Amino acid sequence: TGDFHHLTALALASAVAYVTAELLKGQPIYDSLLKKSLSNGSTPVSDEERNILEVPVGSGSILENRTVEEIPRLSHTVLVNIKRQGADMIPDPDTKLLSGDFLYFLTESRHTEEIHRLCEAQIPKDHIR
Image (tube, rainbow, N blue to C red; front, side, top):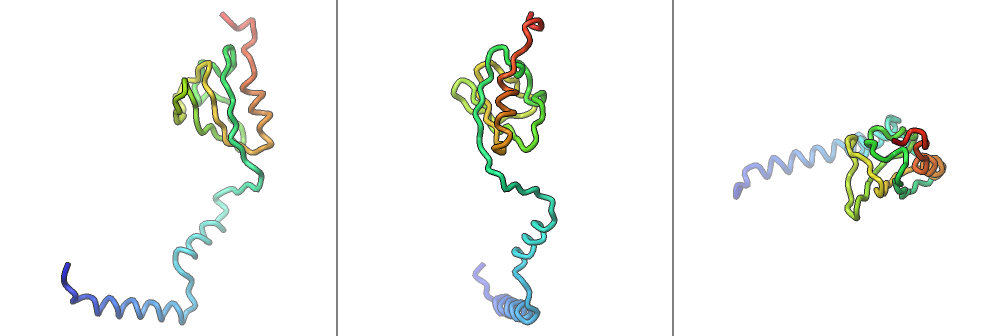
């Protein structure tokens, strides 16, 4: 603003805050907030290796013509992307899955077989009209 009237007061307040923090052995505020947030236990942590798994939706698949919301829930697995005719889509619950789509799941390594079984499952022949 071109006005230095408050510069002295600002410098004095900063010096007092610095000396007070040093005398009381205070930690930097953002470091202490991060430690408190992480120790809260609200965020689950996984040590297992994670993978992005690409799975096609085939013709006659139980996933064909269903919405993302209708996909059976798998633990520790998130659908992060759908590729349709070469274009990427961010999935939302109302996105309808079509034959030829590629689904990209972020999952722990131990769940890859379960995802493959789900996506390869076919509609029983007696239910096809």
